[in-house]
Amino acid sequence: MLQVKQINKMIKNKPILTDINLSLSAGVVYGFVGRNGSGKTMLFRALSGLMRINSGEIIYQGKRLHVDFPVLPNLGLTIENAGLYPEFTGFKNLQLLAKLNAKIDNTQIRRAIERVGLDPDDKRTFRKYSLGMKQRIVLAQAIMEQPDIIMLDEPTNSLDEDGVRLIRQVITEEKERGAMVLLASHNKEDIQLLADHVFYLDAGRLSNEVIHHAE
Image (cartoon, rainbow, N blue to C red; front, side):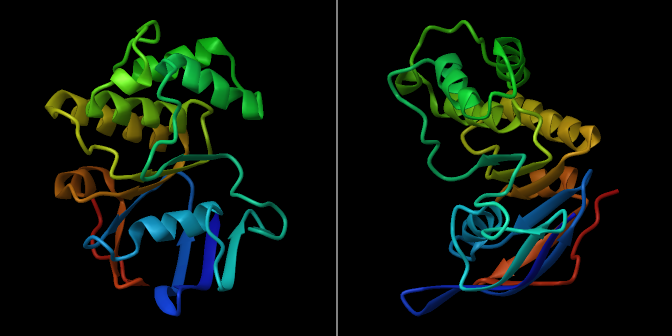
């Protein structure tokens, strides 16, 4: 369970997130919709711990973010810029990231890359990847450690039809595994097909009403 209690964030005296309350559970896909600048990415930054809030609490399994742990544990995240090394292959990048937690080995890294439709033996560097390939490898790093919580910011951007279909399949599989998935997407079909509950963000305010429930 991830609980968000009355969180607020201001940057240069401008409200970015206002009075956000959420109660999220495992094995559910939550969709977050809203126009550009509505606060979706900032909300993910706040919930993950990458950005500190000004007030309120974010509680995961009874412990408080920034008090009991600096960032949300057991988290897979794709958000804005990938931050991968352009001079290394996709596999090498994921190897380096995997060393941080030392939870998985090369076999699991290879499997994650294959799940998103890429070749783990591809010798091209990240710099030479197409936009779609970059999107896929970033998703691979988000799922490779089988995290309890996955936050995906526009995961199907820059993908062709086959890529979109594959990524949707991966998201569904992660939900079925028991992960809590938070999905921000401008692709209405992503939200309609994948999300169990959808929340609307407007100018940093989140509707507490569930506005859609996928059958």
